[in-house]
Image (cartoon, rainbow, N blue to C red):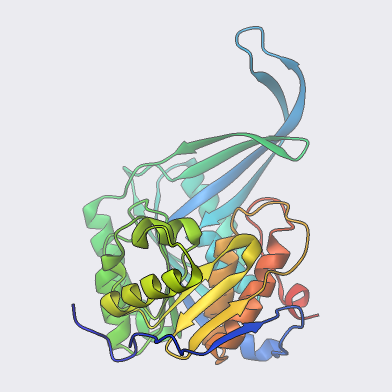
Length: 333
């Protein structure tokens, strides 16, 4: 496979450093306000039913939940875009939704969020819903409703991408394997030709489709699915170096839960230690990480500074229930 000029293998003498994300890097609000991020990918509606459990069903040995409150939140790529706006950036969202109640609800929530929607509508699509049933802050059940968009709608989305490319600074691909990024390889190539950095939150084991991305942000399970189980840090470095070289990734950021995150790039290896705090809910933390990275890069920060702030944002968002955001004051004050 061809080797990207920015993806040379790292030697054993590569520079390795560790940074702390406890002290925020000062970035003026106005600087973040100038960042323009285009999020492309799979959107979903995160629906929460809250209730009490006081008895077991006589029909089966399962709890009976008396639902008392419902809450809807933007999920998937929509949550990524919402995170970018929460930090003060300008965010557009290119996605496909159905002509159904959850699709209309997503449009309504996007209108409230400040995200600029660029939506394609597919009458045959069941807009993805992740329904979670909770009692006393504990998740009891999750029910998913989904299918994939039609080919014609995805081609229309690709054409819309061409129109939007020039008016954004950073392109962010949020892949949840729901079909919205069928043409991701073409999109990355177009963005690369336009000189736009492309960040990818991957899904599945076919990363060939992300070839040429500027930065890819897998968690440990996602990376393991592609490169296999590593036996040591040296083994991990060798596997990531080989992957980056073969697929022409300029950098790879591995999120490692309680171990923080590790950035692999041509400048070396950077470890960011996890921010010590109580973990309440990790759902959506990856969305916050990649959104923070995109905003900071769009504002002109270095990748190292962007990673430190993304790590800090992740430490904040896991202390919240469900898909949530981190705003400017939480991150910097």
